[in-house]
Amino acid sequence: MIIRAKAPLRIGLAGGGTDVSPYCDEFGGTVLNACINMYAYATIEPRDDGKIEFRCEDRVEYAEFNSEKYLEIDGKFDLLKGVYNRIVKDYTKKPLSYTLTTYVDAPAGSGLGSSSTLVVTILKAFQEWLNLPLGEYDLANLAYSIEREDLKMAGGRQDQYAAAFGGFNFMEFNGEKVLVNPLRIKKEYINELEFNVLLYYTGTSRLSAEIIKNQANNVKSKNHTAIEAMHELKKYSYEMKEALLTGKINKMGELLKFGWESKKNISDSITNPIIDNIYETAINAGATGGKISGAGAGGFFMFYCPNNSRYKVINELSKLGGEFRRFRFTNIGAESWITK
Image (cartoon, rainbow, N blue to C red):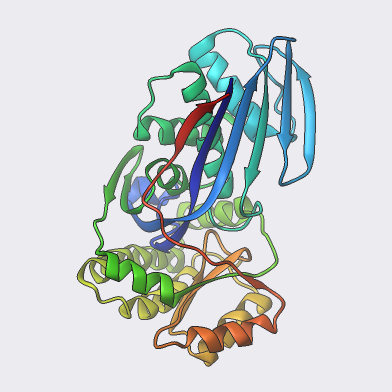
């Protein structure tokens, strides 16, 4: 028996950062995101030799352990160990023996929520294998708990819920309470969005945890500029939701531009000269707005390019050494199946 699972990565359209504590605990956060056809994959192959094997094929990293009730968290394969430890603690109460193979279509630090999506994917595979009673909210909340509580990894809440639910979602965060509002967007609006949005990989990844810690510290210290910037990001999430639902697609470029200016005020670490040059090059070539997906400082840039300006933007950005990723939006969240 072989158990497989996959879950989609996401692009953040507006409000990213307001899902991070302590801001969402004190003020409430809102995020608009959309899942795309880039995925995290997991395969579980049960075994009976008392061993656990991890195979991270995209990172070319492999390890084998004795099957025990708890695997030490030591900086190596921590996400995979964290999921295993929680499954044993909450469900099986005894060690498991298996081979886990993973692959993610985007590198770590890409800004597309790859780490959290991988956790959701692995949990989905365990759900299929062990017949666990987990709905979308349960799956996302458990993934969040493993990352933020068990592993003490800094980050927000949107990625886990995007991966579990799929599609376009307007998410509301109030402390531990999360409400996911799926958006019914007309197909022609989605087609236009896919045509006009470019996804550009800068060629550099970043450690989002440090940026997020800096953002959280700015809120804790009552940094007025940073808090007001997050208020603005939240406002733009409502405006972008309205633009999507009413077909005012070209307004998204303007909103992305405003959101990027506000995002840069959250933390000094969000941008740098390389990022600024990429952004200005795209704008000068015809893009009306853009933003880094995720915490900032690297990873994937998203640009809105109306009126066939995408071609000139592609030509100009290609000179800077990054790469474009073609994508389509997907409404399907985490899914799993069994094969032989």
